[in-house]
View 1 (tube, one colour):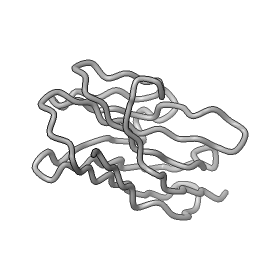
View 2 (view 1 turned 45 degrees about the vertical axis):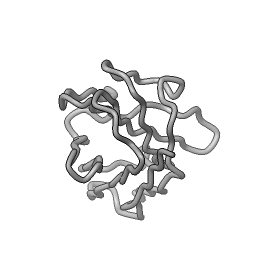
View 3 (view 1 turned 45 degrees about the horizontal axis):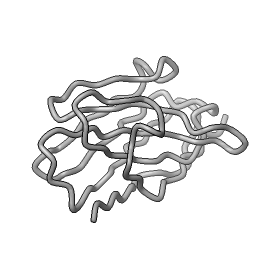
View 4 (view 1 turned 30 degrees about the vertical axis):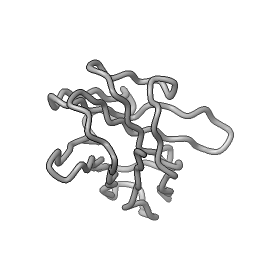
Length: 123
């Protein structure tokens, strides 16, 4: 049973930083993708960043240069460092995982999901 647990969300002012963590358990695949998604009220869930087992990363254009995804494979944990946060980054952030070689950016590309952690950025 794969379980993903996010933490690290909160409320910050515009320009601030937060670091999200995603702890995975029951996950022993050698090839995998870990992704971060977000969903604001009334909007569709969108991909933010992904990282594969080789450490290759992808980012949405809206977060390039501000967000960094990383992982600690030994601890089965993925991270999303978010800097220069903007009010439009306000959303529920979800961690997702899937067994694949090339990471996708769509929610349908991932089989396993965490419960989400709220990020609120005030102006």
